[in-house]
Amino acid sequence: MSNLTKDSRIYIAGHRGMVGSAIVRKLKKEGYTNLITATSSELDLRNQADTEDFVKTNRPDAVIIAAARVGGILANNSYPWQFLYDNLMIEANLIKAAHECDVNNLVFLGSSCIYPKEALQPLKESYLLTGPLERTNEWYAIAKISGIKMCQALNKQYGRSYMSLMPTNLYGPEDNFDLKTSHVLPAMIRKFHEATENGNQTVNVWGSGKPMREFLHVDDLAEATVFFLENEIDSENDLINIGTGKDITIKQLAELIQRITGHEGEINWDSSKPDGTMRKLMDVNVASELGWTAKIKLEDGIRETYRWFLENVESIKEVKMAD
Ligand code: GFB
Image (tube, rainbow, N blue to C red; front, side):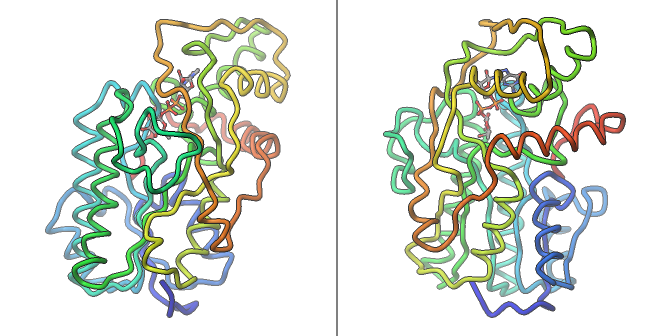
């Protein structure tokens, strides 16, 4: 990556989602003036011809792939076809169009669920494809692994330097707060908030509370994306983990959010819902050796996200899939 100037043309695919909108905010803050975006009604990234036309017409100098079909454990488990097909098509169309239009800079965003379920912890980049995946999200994981491999194939065969960044579980403003499709952190913010409003009702949360998760504020990911876009990275590092290197149990997360929202009732664990993988802590040494580390502390990030939730509580959409 490199040779970008503040007037370089940067296409952010998925700019309305939590990740894409954070990247747009960060790029604007850094003074980039030529940002290219399209909503899903203007451009369906699953359509190859339309995606190629869009990239050809707009001639970006850089492409950031933040567009994806995303969701929490239940959505992943319930919609295997959409999570596999939509993500494969979005990535294949964008990566191919970028290559054919001779776009030099490309960042592909994935997820920590690409690593094997039983891999050693913390998860190093080199553990990719060393064992079976977690069943609740193997469809999404296989699509994201394919995106990494598409970038690596172009790097190997055509000398591209397309980069894949793998963030851990993300949260922040613009997250999906729909209780059926969301991830745990926004779901808990909403559940504890609503239970508190309704006289400290019991809060139902899923699984055993024992799994451990690492949480990264989306503004940290946006900073990492811009950092790796701007800095020339050795071709050996075309897959980089982006996380905090620290995790907590789901039970600890529930207690933290309970405290932040001021809830004074009981917590009930619904064991009919899946736990998913027991642990997926990122090894973040490669990113930190290259000069980037996460800055936002979990409690500060949750407080800020809760403020955003309160400001937007009326308009929070029922179902929000990234576009
Ligand atoms: O965040 P989450 O949905 O996804 O769930 P994953 C994390 C853990 O929180 C699981 C528990 O053990 C859930 O059972 N949990 C407790 C809850 N209460 C709730 C709740 O109210 N809602 C939700 N959603 N969970 C996803 C993958 O896995 O993480 C994706 O499915 C992707 O592919 C994403 O990798 C980052 O962390 O298990």
